[in-house]
Amino acid sequence: MKDQYLLKKNMIFLNHGSFGACPKSVFNNYQHWQRLIESQPVQYFSHDIYNYLKKSREDLSTFISCDSDDIIFIPNPTTAINSIIRSLKIDKNYEVLTSNHEYGAMIRAWDWFSKDKGYSLIQNNLKLPFTTKNNFVDDFWQEVTNNTKIIFISHITSPTAIIFPIKEICQRAKNEGIMTIIDGAHAPGHIDLHISDLDPDIYIGACHKWLSAPKGSSFMYVKKEIQNSIDPLIVSWGKDVDPSPSSFINENQYQGTRDFSSFLSVSTAINFQKNNNWDIVQAKCKDLTKQTLISLQEILKTDLLCPVNDNWLAQMASIHIPVNDSSKIKNTLLINHKIEIPIFQWDNKNMLRFSFNAYNDKSDSNALIDAIKDIFFKGD
Image (cartoon, rainbow, N blue to C red; front, side, top):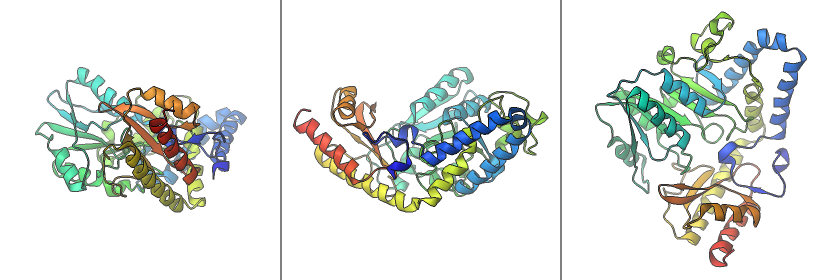
C-alpha cells in the first residue's frame, strides 16, 4: 500500500494523526479539479461549483450518516470552532465544560472568546487510567452544574489518542438540556462514524486526516434546529447567488473566491477506502497499535492511559515517555532512525504518540520498538 502514497520511501511515517497522508489517486483528483477551475473560471465559480459541492456533500453525508443539508465544508476544524463560538449567544453566567484532553488550538479559541463574552471555560481534569464508559461519563459529569450550557469534547483525543464515549455523553446532555459540540477531527475514516446515531448538536470533522483527503478539507455538521444560530465567519454573496434552498448552506459554503478542490476530492477519498477493503486495513492497524503499545509499555515501564481494547483505541495510541527533553528524542528518532513521530508535553508529561495506517506494517512497529530500546538501554 505504501506505493499508493506520496510518502518518502526512506522514512517510517508513524504520524498520520497530525496531518494525514494523501494517496496518489486522491491527489491526482485534487489536481484535476484545480485544472478544471483554470479551464473556465467564470463558468466554474458562477454556476458549476454549487452542483459539485452538492454532490460532494451528498457523498460525505452518506459516509458519515447524516443529512447532506446539515453539513458544510470548511478548511479545518479550527475555522469551524471560531465560527461556532462567534455565533453562539453565550451569557456571562454560562459555563462551557470540556476536558484536559482537548486539542490546544480549540481550547485557546474557547479561552480567547471567554474574555469578551464572559462565560467560564471549565476543563475537567479526568481521572486516569480510564476503565469503563459509565465510569468515564460519571467522572466527566462531576463538573456539570446548573450553569453548564455547552459541552465541548473530542470524539478521539489528539494528545492521548483515546476514543471518548460520545454517544453516552450526547444522550445525557440532551436529557439535561445541554448543547453538545463534538471535535471529531480524528474520527472520519478512522472509526465508524454515524452522526445520526450519536445525535450531537454540532459535530466537526477533518477529512484530510484519516480519510486521507487533500489538506484543507473538513466539515461542520449542525443540527437543523440550531442552524439559524450559526452565522458565516465571512459574509459573502450567500443566498443572493447560491441556489441551495438551505439558508445554512448558502450563507456558509461560499465565503469568497477560493480553491474548492480539496472539498471536491472528498468523494474520491471515500472511494479509495471502499476500493481497498478498508475494514481489513483498519483491523490490521488496530491490532498493530495494540501490540506496539503493549511492547512499549513493557520497555518504558510507564502507566497506560486506558485499557488496550476497541472501546478506547483504534489506529493511534499515546504513551508517557520518561525523558526530560522531548525535542532531543524526537530528533534522534527522526535523524538516526528515520522515524517521523510526534513527542510532546501533555499534563506535565512527555508523550509519544504513534499512528498506523494502510502504508504501515509490522516492520514499522518493530523499528520503533528497537529504536526506543536503543535510546533507553544503549544511550542512542
